[in-house]
Image (cartoon, one colour):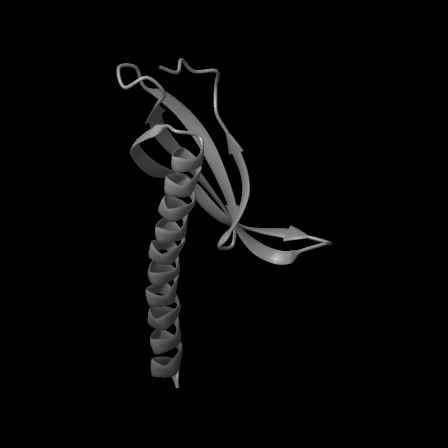
Amino acid sequence: MENIYYLLIIGLIFWYFIYLRKVAEFARSHINKYCESERLQFISIARRSSRIRFNRKLGPHWLSIFEFEFSGDGESSYQGLMTLRGYRLDDINTPAYRIH
């Protein structure tokens, strides 16, 4: 009987890593679209955190925060924050930056 619990735990861990990878792909896609629409050069992206949140309106959901690096003029770089709720884009915050 305990073998079933071990398999369940291993399965949940495996699912979690696959889910995090899929969220990272969606985050990269959202950032690429944002940078193209704002005429920015995308440099890199990194996950800051992912955790489960509970909200009356949305119920339980995963909140993932990503830091991304971009350039407005091709010479300097800036860091922004992007928040995803599940696979959906929630917010993008960027500092003031120079444009060419």
